[in-house]
Amino acid sequence: MVKTFFSKETGAITLFVLLAMLFFLIIVLSVFMNSSNKIISQTSEMDKIKEEYEQSINNIDQIYNETLSENL
Image (cartoon, rainbow, N blue to C red):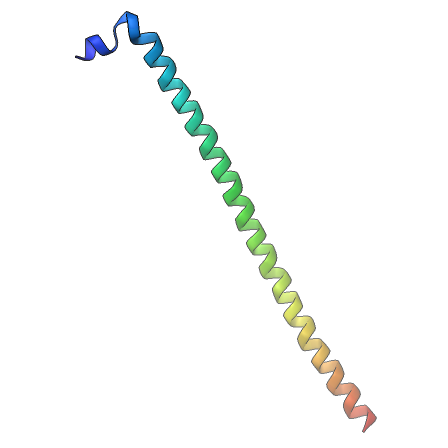
């Protein structure tokens, strides 16, 4: 059965199909890895922005309290 599957008549087509599938899988894997890396970097950037925002909110509260105490 193996000899008939890889015979000279269908061997070239089978090899072409296997190589095409391998090439397609490599492309799909690279696209997935690229998008995964982008998502990870965007998530870390969002975390940094969130931390900065929270710090600025705390700073605004502190400035407000200082201004309020000075006016009294």
